[in-house]
Length: 281
Image 1: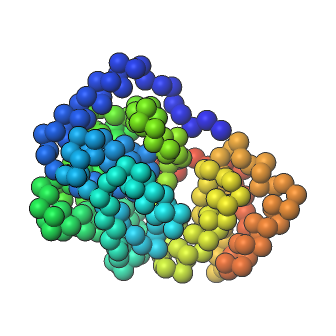
Image 2: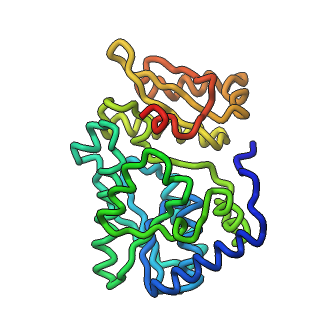
Image 3: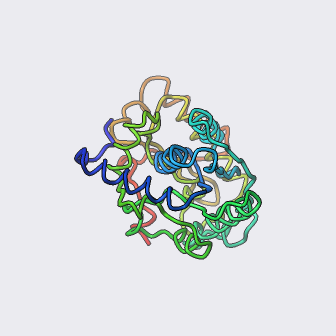
């Protein structure tokens, strides 16, 4: 399964990396909000390369962040030799997040960047940065408003990185997540207007953990309600659709979903498509 766009030229990657290094050199110190995905991994990697122990990675842990993702963030930070701070995030306790009215990400990112700002102040670090890339600027992303309100910098945007350039640069650095599929917090599994609760988050998390265990790479377990009972709609990359209907696999998925309380288990034949919510809005 290929998820890599047409590769940028080597010179383009060199120039983007030179700009990125210069940005961190100008910052002097930085705290990077770090999820373990390829974008924030590249930011943390280059920040650590330029600034050494003056670069700190921060990961926010909450029920919306799968345990497998937290473990990967820990592993990458350790491999890069970064100081890694893990803080508890309580975005689910915010009514604006739970209501899920179309701007859920604003409340999530406000919580994240507030935690990052507080930690940066405690460590006497002047700058907070994230992994936003140029591709993100055209999407429906309320989180960008939260970043602006908290004066969070986007060094990859400043240096001109799109996704293809990020992946190629990450590959050069030997980051194991260079081709990792995009991930969004588990709150994105709920249609706008559907209330997000800890119980529902745990339902989709358990199903997705099982899909990951099966070896799938690009997937979502979408929570819906039908006749007052929960329904799960599984999205996987089109190349991986046959895996779900293999003998024994289909039955095991149904068993896991039913054990988590889903009355119906459905498979979306369109397959996973990035940004469906954004396009709908």
